[in-house]
Image (tube, rainbow, N blue to C red; front, side):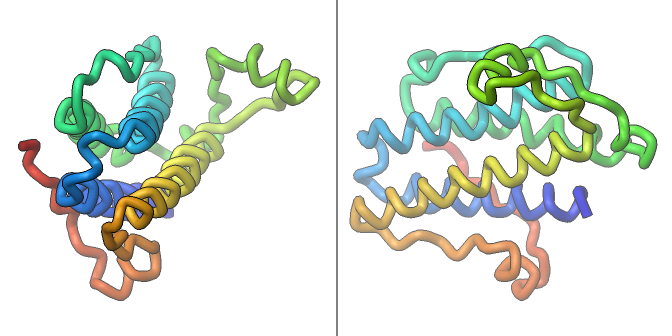
Length: 168
């Protein structure tokens, strides 16, 4: 199920990016820049954690425009399949240490419970969907037509492969 969830996530991200780049007002919209950066920052941070690497928290100001964020996002989707395809059932049950758990403890008022790989992978997909919804709402506010990116739409369409835009 996680493999399918991640296939949908990539398709929906690519579809959202095509819509964003086709909306001329999006290029100057700071909110879109921040949300797109945030989505891909979280995706990449978790992939680094899952592969026992240190997350690289590149600030949004390091990306001068949307094409720069897109290029960065594409690197994640280039690296993700080999990780997802290599996961075993036992791996999914392994505990993942989250480097920012102290900040989470402050917000929760208690230390976070142990978190399994499958739970963090589910979190990344849900987190991405949440913010992707905010992005599509922002596109509508800019006068655009948000794409249909629901999971069920992807299923009804025959689970199409992602069609990433080329950065202008």
